[in-house]
Amino acid sequence: MRSQFCRAVTGAALLGVFVVASLGAQQTERDDNTGFGTTSAEFLLLGAGARGAALGNSFAAIVTDPTALYWNPAGAAEMMRPGFTFSTYSYLADSRYSWGGVAFPFNDGQSTIGFQFGTFGFGEQAVYTIASPNGDGTTYSVNESFAGVTYAQNFSDRFSAGITGKFISDQLADSKAQGFALDFGAGFHALIAEKPVRASFVIANLGSTLTHTGTGLDVNVNRPAPPGQQDLPQDPQPARYTTVAFGLPVVFRIGLSYEFVSSASSRLTLLGNFEQPNNSNPTAGGGLEYALMDISQSGFTVMARGSYDYKSDNNFTQDPTLEAGFATQASNQGLDGLALGGGLAYARGDFSVSLDYAYRHLGILGGTNVFGATLHW
Image (tube, rainbow, N blue to C red; front, side, top):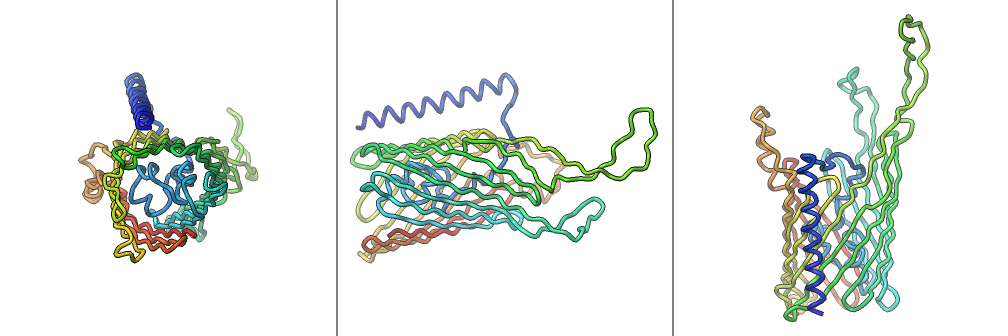
């Protein structure tokens, strides 16, 4: 079994090298063909759960609670009891992102079905135009959401896989778009030196494009006169802007974990990940989770977490002509990808509940606080 795990890890490493090498070759030929700003519905990348927020993209390697529906569908197959998770946090410009998921194991714990939802947006924002720089008296809202269903299966005592189908709705004021996406995940776990080791492989948001339509694109225009002829008075004619279809933010992730300390009273897990999105540069990172379990046989467990994901696209060259305020903020760009957090859990019999918190740094955009709760029964 150890040799199987080694082959799996070696294959993942070779695949990562191939991807990076391919990207390097493409950039040599075309300078930089990274698809910055070419995808829509990027709220699909905002995560699930405070535990996942604290451990970053490395979390996909060890997730076995309802947030597996988002991070790695294969992890849901390892749930032994039904569970529900909800998390929420304030994002930028008074926007909010919330996620919830519920999963139900069946077939003697060999299979799991789950349902999830995520929503992002803000409401009642004033409309400013060139003609009305102080606002024209109207407001607009943004509501982006997705709903998904997951099926996960254990194919052996070491290997599991899962698939998620997601319906996506993107409403921007009076225009909207809809789409569909699939997530695929696989997980492999074994023992090395009597300690758990895990590997995960995930492809997320593989699906359709989004094209916005709706009354928000309606305008009244005057038809120009043919060349050489004088414009005549006319009533504005109704027309509608056409929009370009944008793809979804597809992500490929590889995750690894090793329980450096594994005992009945404490656990220390080391995590690592590699990620290749289709709209940005590759990223890599790592995390750490420590758990002090069943303290004095009280049923309480205390957890501390931290992670950092390196994002090379944040290392932009500082422009000396920038205003001092922005330059000061830009000095924090290297902190983007840093996350810290912890949790408190209580278990008694088949019932357990956990409350989790995470702080995520968003570089020049500041930081945010993530709160989450998980219930198993």
